[in-house]
Image (cartoon, rainbow, N blue to C red; front, side, top):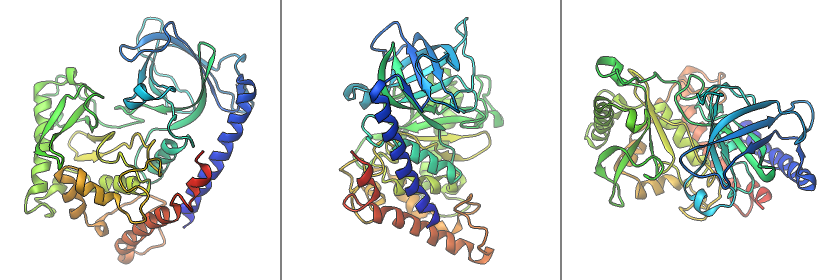
Length: 407
C-alpha cells in the first residue's frame, strides 16, 4: 500500500509542479524552473528523414531559474528530424529525434539532463497527454521494478526563438552500456556463439522501421502475420546469417508455444524467453491500462548466449486511462482478455503458461525481505494481484486521481 500511495503522491505533486511552471512560463515565455532547450534550424518545419543539420543549446541551472538570455550550459551541432507516427500527421506539437555531432560531422557522446553520456536523444511532445506525465510515470515504475526504461527529464523547447511548450527529454532505445546493455553485433559475427547476439527487435506499425523483419508463421486473430521488425542492427547492416539465426530462434519460440509441451520447463517456451521480464512487462501494461500494450511499440532484445527479454517499455501516452476503447474503463483486469481476442496466438499461451508463483528474484520494492523463503512464492503472487487491483479499481475516471489531473 505504501508503494501505491507513493505513485499517487507522485502524480499529484508532479501535476501541481507542472501547472505552476506552465503558468509562470506563459507570462513571459522567457524563463522557467525547467531546463530550456533552444534549437536553431535552417528549415522550418523540421522534416522527417533525412535528419538535417541544426544547432542546440541547453540552459540547465540546477540551483536557480533558467532564462533564455543566459549563457548555455551545453551547446552542440546536431542532426535532427521529426519523429513519431500518428503524432506527425495529427498533432501540432511535434516530437524530434536528434544526434549530437562534432565539427567534422561525427557522432559524439555528451552527458546532458543529468543522464549518462550518449549522442542519440528524443525530445518527446506530450501533446495528447494533458497531464504530461504518462510516459514519465510508466518509465519510472518500470525502473523501480528492475526493468530498464528510458530516463526522462522535463524541459521547455524553443525553435528559432519561438516557444513550443513543455517537452520530455529522454533516452532513445538503443544498444548501450547504460541503455539496452547487450553485446555489440559486428558484420563478422557469423557463427558459433558470436552469432547469438545481441539483437533488438520490435512489434510495431510496419511504417516505423520500413517493415523489414522476421515474418511469423502464425496468423494473428485478425488475419495478418506478425512481423518482428529489426531495430539493432538495422536491416541494411544485418548479414543473411544473422537474419536467419534471429528468425529461426523466434520461430522456434513460437513453435514451442503451440506445442502440447509448451508449459514443460525443459521443452516448452521457457527455453527461449526470460520469463521474469515478461512477467514485469505484463504487470506494467496491466496496471497502466496501456491500450497499445503488446501490439505496438513493443521492444524485445536478445543478448549473446541469452534468451529473449521483452522491453524496454515505450510509448505509454495512451495509458493510464487516456483512451476510451479496449475496455480501458472497466473495473475488471480486462486488458488481458483483450489480448486473447486481438493478439497473436502466442500471447494466449504465454498468459496461460506462466506460473506466477514460480517467479524468482524480483527486485525491491516488490520483493519484500521480511518474507520467509517458504512463503515467498505464495506472497509474491498475492502481492501482485493486489497491486493490480489497488491501482485499477480506485482509479476509475468517475472517482480516481486521474480525474483531478486531466484537463
